[in-house]
Amino acid sequence: MNQSNNSNITNNTRELSRARRGKSWRNAALLGAAAAGALLTTQPSRAGSIFVIAMENHNLTQPIPTNSPQQILNNPAAPFLNSLMTPGSSNSVQVSFATAYYNAGMKVHPSEPNYVWAEAGSDFGVHTDADPRATNGNTFFDNSIHLAAQLDAAGISWKNYQEDVQLSVSPTNSASGTNAPVANPFYGTTQYNYAVKHNPFAFFADSAAKNVYALSQLFSDLTNETTGSYNWITPNQFDDAHSALNGGFTYQGTQFAGDQASIAQGDNFLSIIVPEIMASKAYQDNGAIIIWWDESEDGDTTNFAIPEIVISPLAKGNAYASTVVMNHSSDIKTWEEVFGLSFINNSIPITETNNFGGFNNVATVNDLSDLFMTGVIPSPATFSVTSGRIETNPRTGRAIQRVEIKNTSDTPAHVPLFLVLDNLSSNATLVNSGGLKTTILAPVSSPYVSVSLNNRGFGGLEFGPVANLENILLPYQSTTVTLEFLNPSGDAITYTPRVLSVTPTP
Image (cartoon, rainbow, N blue to C red; front, side):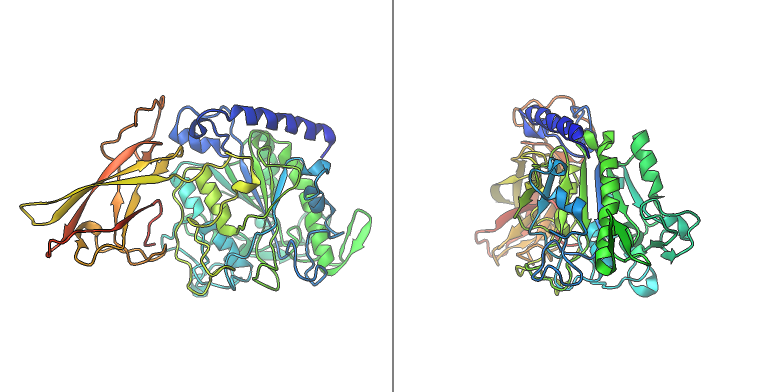
């Protein structure tokens, strides 16, 4: 990465900052602006891509830095990674990184559950590294919501680049050996190692064999501007720092062995692929690279931080070190905010609490906003609830109430929404709840109703031309829902309203 490139990118960042003035919902420089185009025809003229590069089995920091595996920060086998995290380095101009990124949940190990979590916001309680098979209990083909399916439903392009997948009989079968037909371009030997456990899409029926490509296709796609809006990149188990090559690895004139060789191999890989992506239009037009690690090593407490590095023209930059608590659900939440998707709400096993006693549910965790300039990541929509008078239907004897839900934010919201009635008085029963009660987002056991669009009003604001709004509650737009209660006693009906954008019962 040379200084002239850094200078150009810095100038672009200043221009983007000026361009974001005005209504944030209209002008925010969304990383996935193609998604905004699906909502509004008044979209930015350029839209970059998201690139997630998955790395393996090392902490950013740990109580004893040189324990095996060794930590990444200040490690001599990782000069490129450390240059990204060093303020004033020419490589850190567009970099932010997390210092409080923790494991997805207690005992969410080994690797595979974390990759599944990165795609679905839960590991579904399955802790194995086995290839996906029904007999292994790790094929989540039961219509579980996951990110790729959401992207498909919204018409947003995604691609899955897996190094060495071309040497396997299928994307759902691991393959390793020492006799690949050609030498690996990153480390120069014919050793190969494709591990399905590091391919998050392989565990869902609708994405297991879809949009999967050999890593070599990435470089062609970068040149031809044919990458997806969302791109997942898994190096093989040598280039992701999981395993040392036979005979170790010589890097920048130093021979490394064991775990340090693994780290050096991963650092070498990133030092080559990251500048390649940064040179592309897909990155330079408001794109982002996320270097992601799978799990904490040797501990699930806050003493073991996982690396998470963001490189983007829209990052705060100069190796900004965020202290905001994050985890794998934070990534999913961010991409769902960027692409205007509803939050995934798959059930998290009761034993998999986080470091702070709660659960890393996508809807409730911090997103990655602190790693980017203010306003880049759209804030979640907020809502007000206005309840009308409760009247009695003379024909049915039921108590009827019309409730208005208004989007009070600058962020469009997908419907259906869900109106939850917390603390409903004991004298009343919500008839049109369908018998459904919240089970994931506390407080639990509250009845709720689905809210669709009707009587949509624009609140006096001009929005300009819009398209594909059948399932969008625009900023400052309202919709209504009718509640029906059984209330034999005739006493006052009270409750605390809550609006959710995720299904309260997965």
